[in-house]
Image (cartoon, rainbow, N blue to C red; front, top):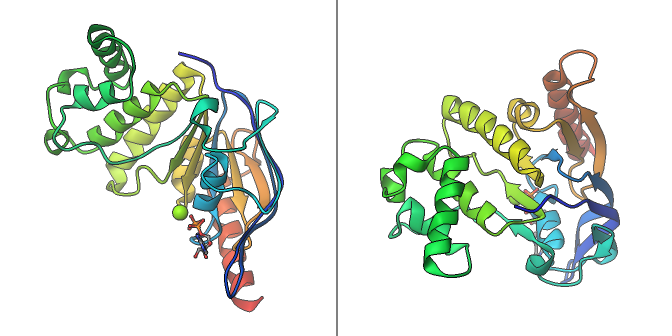
Length: 245
Ligand SMILES: Nc1ncnc2c1ncn2[C@@H]1O[C@H](COP(=O)(O)OP(=O)(O)O)[C@@H](O)[C@H]1O
Ligand SMILES: [Mg+2]
């Protein structure tokens, strides 16, 4: 599996045109390191999904630059290895069949590779199960295996565990960190839950309400005090500012 690449956003602004143009992102700067697992946190509507669409090359920025390993993103970025985790699995395919879907090459090789990926996410024993038969959290891990099958240099995950209950979410999050560390992928993980942000990310980038930009980056490992409380306060302050601003 190939290593992750760097992702840089430089002074990125995105204005959606229309009768009342809307600026979703304004002057956003962010550097994600090679092989890093970074969480991106911000209130609803601050432009997180917009940022992902830009990095994936599905839409273009109004101003600024988006660079993967130093090269600008100019269109749908599958060629540069950007995958936005499409969360839903095909319900009519088995776990193995779902992972195989992302692979290319002869059938036997695809099957072998899909088995390795299911093993990587700890879901081997469920390979013949359909999504509805998987245990809580299992669907998310199989979906992760399928995203990894595309061998992305940058993996973007937009609140992938939001549908899970608290306890399942906690162990899947920990499992996810271990898997990412083993693969060396560059991952940006969106959440609006402070607890999940510090569980998953070694660094947490906090966004302002729309127009979104990165307000602060919290280094979870070296933060003096409880990073969760700090993040919760940052989010709350942002929301208060938005109401009064
Ligand atoms: N295609 C679009 N046209 C106009 N406004 C949009 C479009 N896409 C998103 N927006 C607006 O941009 C803002 C940010 O949306 P989004 O990126 O989905 O936020 P988040 O993912 O952080 O909740 C929202 O106010 C949303 O209504
Ligand atoms: Mg969103």
